[in-house]
View 1 (cartoon, helix red, strand yellow):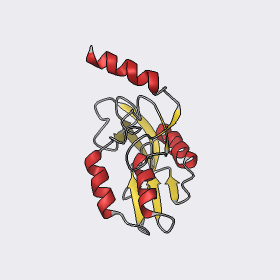
View 2: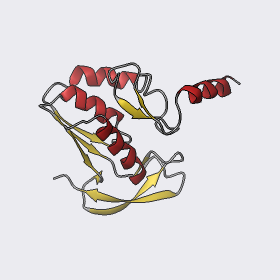
View 3: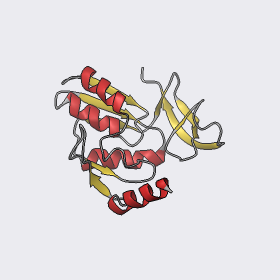
Length: 160
């Protein structure tokens, strides 16, 4: 019952598919698309709180950051803010369905220091079957997603 009430309230305020401003946290004022996959916690600044603390204490202005498995780009957005205009973020994301939202978030927030690479990183070059998890927004080559049998064909590049 609690879950139903919570979902009803959240859906009333945060419309699915709508680009909204983040209300709290280090990305307050940034735009982010609401969906069952992206969740509502990002709008409330409550996504991976422990990770945010680490990133805020370690990543400095002018750094170069690689976001391997950028997903929808919430971390890339934070990295972009932390490295500033003198830094650079390389956001790698192989899943075509995630790339759409990743690009949306980077462009909606006019993040000029983020470069999107639409492939996976590994020790070879070519194509790979990327295993896709149940909800479709996560996956891996050997781990998450192996239980579903769903696959997406992705480019696989060696960064060397």
